[in-house]
Length: 152
Image 1: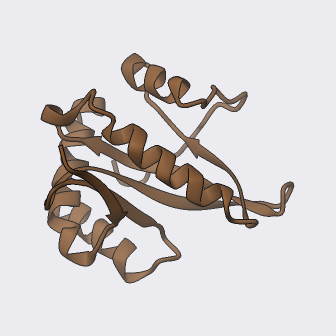
Image 2: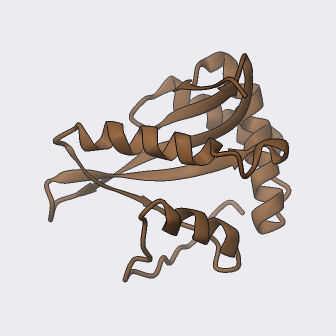
């Protein structure tokens, strides 16, 4: 495997859209509206304040991704980077793709004075992902996430 990482480019939007749809199907059993999903991906590229995607490639083929969004913490006078839209192609799982993406983002975050930490959310039943995140040094937060979803 010829693994390398980079920030995603607008030309990657179709693959990111597909990976997001596959992730939603696998983890939550959701069939996302592809038109809405593509518009959401494009919106990130149009406004960097919304977030940034990073991709992992084997040669020129995108094999994994994650997105960073931002949550301001007045308590810490810094931003948490939220890791979202995590996906690795099935044929590349267990080969360190996500670990490489995570470590790259973690290293970048640690160099910035305006970033106070990393966060992500994971489905309660997704024990494989929870084990992966724990192995990278993440721990379960004392907070419980609650929401009102107006779309799904």
